Length: 280
Image 1 (cartoon, one colour):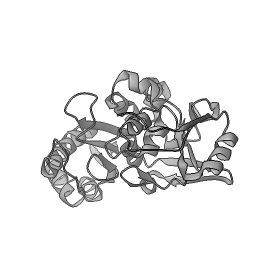
Image 2 (cartoon, rainbow, N blue to C red):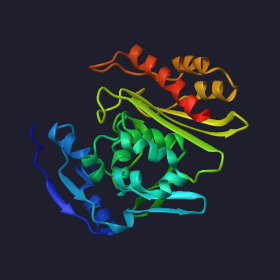
Image 3 (cartoon, rainbow, N blue to C red):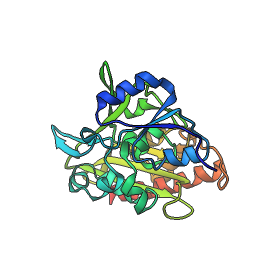
Image 4 (cartoon, rainbow, N blue to C red):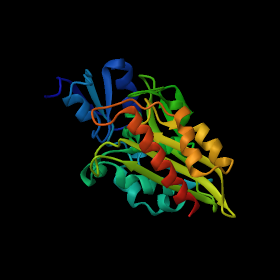
């Protein structure tokens, strides 16, 4: 299947982007790396009137560490995050998750902001953002606003972004000395969409975990912060009890390959492995 017809415009500044968004409204779609969007176009899941190419806007790229935050521009590629020494040192969960994203060719072109704005519930970055309590910087012609990751995702391919807004960057809290993290997912083949996965972070001291955050991908229409399981982990419950608490946290939908019960079982398996990794 081929993409439907559309117009194309390359913007060289955010000012140009906002002008084009004002002109075309909901008929416009932003093109960054295109790794998610082009597939959606070819499957006729998206049919915009115009693609606005934002890939040449320099202020939307780069990784900076300052003021206890790791700021990553929306156009930063998966591969750049995977290779970044700053990310490995200050936001290691992202470095752990990056190799799970598709294949090397896609990681070289796909962008952090594109993945987040697409809001695929099986994608790695949204769950990582929720686990790390990231904040998204969203800009419009009239100014910018910040949105917590936990409030950003509204459903399958649905976010709080308005038609005239652009996701420009993502900020993560920089790692503290006690910070530990783990990212695990299960897929039919390496690089395939995850059946289910977990992004886990905590602080570790004297062999105990505090501040546990468990965010799941592929387990609902949005990334899920498993509050019941987190509370059980905070209380020092055995891993089996933490995993059992997921029954009240997750509502996985069946797909072509896995039933809802299978996904819940796999999420429990990954939870046990993630907790073991955090405490090791």
